[in-house]
Length: 166
Image 1 (cartoon, rainbow, N blue to C red):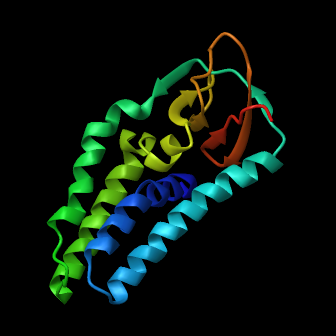
Image 2 (image 1 turned 30 degrees about the vertical axis):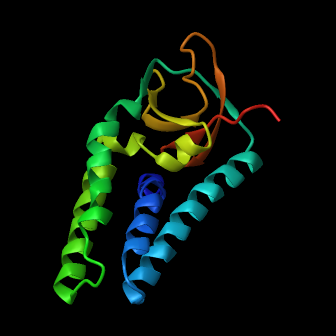
């Protein structure tokens, strides 16, 4: 579950930065910049950890590209353009509740597969499953071919990475 929340924060890093740019200076703006940096650093940590983990050969029977969920995800990117530059306490509470609600939906739905930072580095997110195994979110450049095992580095429970050759 930690991997899903990490993907959520990293996925919305650009949104946090865009919203912070629209706000006047203040604590909320600083918090949003910190969240943007935290999300980017979290995804960088996933890749850094993946390079240090020994890959294990895995074969998958189900491979789904989660990029098809982009339309629903992009609707949340309207937030920076609907915010006010000097939010009141009630505005901040509403934004926080909205973010919490979006987070729960994102983590529990297929939207987890949409992540602009992952795409920025030319990777994709796939929902995969081994025969008789638990579902796994897989970060890879291309979908794994179900006919041959692939070297997967399990970074967090439920989150694997296939890295390109060095």
